[in-house]
Amino acid sequence: MIPFQLTPFQWIVGGLLAVALVTEFLLQFFGMTRRRISLLRAAVWTAALVLILEPGLLQEIAIRLQVGRGTDFLLYLLALCFPVTGFYFLHSIEKQRQQLTRLVRELAHRNPVHVPDTTRQSD
Amino acid sequence: MKSTRINDVIATQLWVVIAAYNEAPNIASVVRGLRGEGVRNIVVVDDGSMDGTAAIATSQNVWVLQHILNRGQGAAIQTGLDFALSHGAELLVTFDADGQHSASDLSALLEPIVSDRFQVTLGSRFLGSAPGVPLLRKLLLKTAVLFTRLTTRLPLTDTHNGLRAMTRSAAGRMRITEDGMAHASELLDRLAKSDLPWCEVPVTIRYTEQSLVKGQRNRAAFEILFRMFVAKLVG
Image (cartoon, rainbow over all chains, first blue to last red; front, side, top):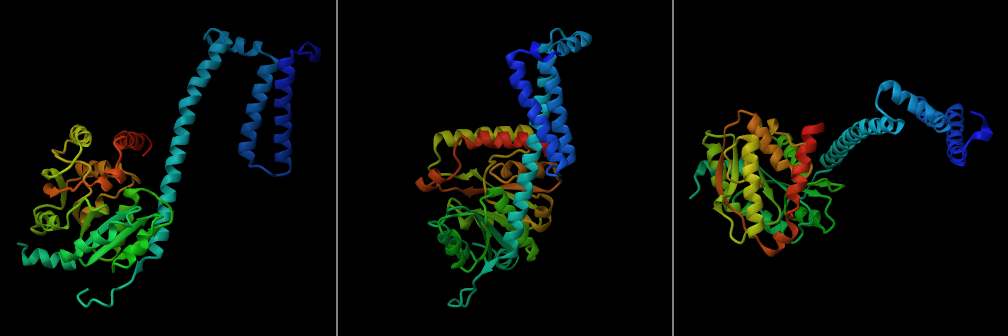
């Protein structure tokens, strides 16, 4: 992995990922982000950076796992991530919807309005 | 002719819950219709209306609760049911705010409960009458009936009819968690899973041009199906 052997794509994307990684560490250092989320993001940036700089690595993993090419391995990973992420967001949205309704209901119950009609005696 | 017992129940034990969203032109006449039948306890839940529905309802000598945000008919009905239950309601009726329901159906709806034969009664337009129902709407409703029969095993003739009555105990056991129109299906689902005795009662639904424009759109059927699917998935 010698710098002058990198392609322009690797320079650009690798550079962006390196900036993201440094930003993540700075945010963490100054306590501006939650530790667990920051570490998770940093792990994703690092993995992406390694795979961009060393594309053969993905291919090697794919061969070892006997899933064909590196792109196939990536496709399987994405196919797994998509429904997991989908369900996660669906669950989150559903939970937020229920919480919002509970809040709106609670506020409604706190301020019921009843103006008796004094002109009618039957009520 | 109404029996004295039912008159007495309507006046003392019954709470009518009306979920209203932008129903300024109808809400006063709906309340007056119920008053004409002797209903004293009425709670209107204004579901974030922007047309002054709450102000008009307030002038009608009813309880008015206001959702600061529009949360849907199911959420508004449950808000009203909770309020009525907390005020000691023994019998509860859900009633639409758009003027489609007829207050004169109340006695027939309550009779099976008052006579202690059932705990839940559901209005059925197909046992009663629904003049002016568009063909496509009728087809969709019939499909919904078929679907509900398959999924709940309840031998129903109407599914998305907002006119229903229930006892205090039944209302406590059938809490609505669906905010939107899917609450009607959810309620039937809960009814099917409970051992609550229920029956259908013939009622009249009046379709007016206004109610058809403002009421459920036909595509709502698909939204309800999707909501039911989501509720099963993550509920």
